[in-house]
Amino acid sequence: MGMDRPLLDFERLDVYRCAIEFLAFSVRITAHMPRGQADLRDQLRRASTSIPLNIAEASGKTGAADRARFHAIARGSALECAAILDVLRLLGVAAAEQVEQGKLLLSRIVAMLSKMCR
Image (cartoon, rainbow, N blue to C red; front, side, top):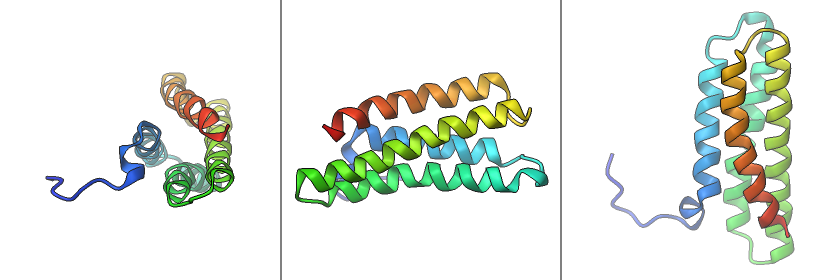
């Protein structure tokens, strides 16, 4: 798939690319979850979707305080995802290696967003 159009501002951000990568990870990890875990699957998908959406929305804001607010919301969603991964591990729905892989990505995202909130 060729990219002939210019990138939108947020598409150039490493944090946005990582957020999209984590969203793809969460879709993969939830694809085979048992029926009884539908609530957790939906919660992880919502929270992981919230991260890139709020980063994109922040890029459209002109005021620094407004941008910081959306970056803070994205950071909160990333932290929520980390907690959900812990719950999935506890319930035996996700393997320890999967959880660590997801948390590695989330820790990068949270670190970048923390800087962007200042």
